[in-house]
Length: 193
Image 1 (cartoon, rainbow, N blue to C red):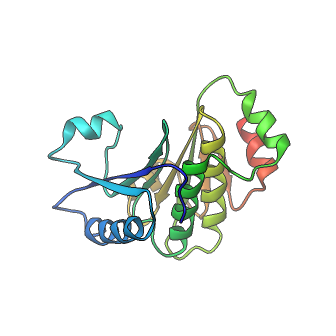
Image 2 (cartoon, one colour):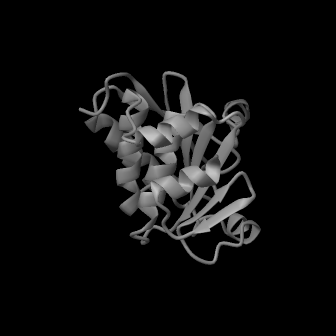
Image 3 (cartoon, rainbow, N blue to C red):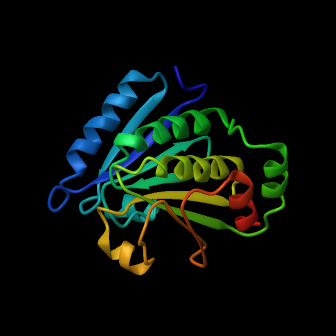
């Protein structure tokens, strides 16, 4: 059992032009069925425009991990393969609020005064990417000012071009700070603060 409180997986799909949507939905539904307190809400990106606007989702598949006012973790693309473990951890952390971050990192995050958006680009076969995604998710659960977005670089060539992703994991913080490769908890917190 993961949860101590209910966690919603808010999933956006579309019927046309999204080969990854159906397998991702099935995997998320299986995950939710195996964990007490985890539910899935499925929306169509095209047909449910108001819901998509409410959650600021503009592409599919998209998965948002939400509980107790925490809706700061999202995945664009299929969080399968190596990333599935980060999704399970994100559900656990979102449910409990326990991130496992050091006291020093927690203190630095409490000092944040403006929003921080962390985007981590990954590929399904990258063995280093889950560490950066998990770390971004930890920071998002710990601070209400931090949001984490994991983006499958193989699914969104427009974002790969926009952010000049030449290797993964690539982390982009507030559109200005870029880290290629794996960073330590301390280094990522320093980049945020």
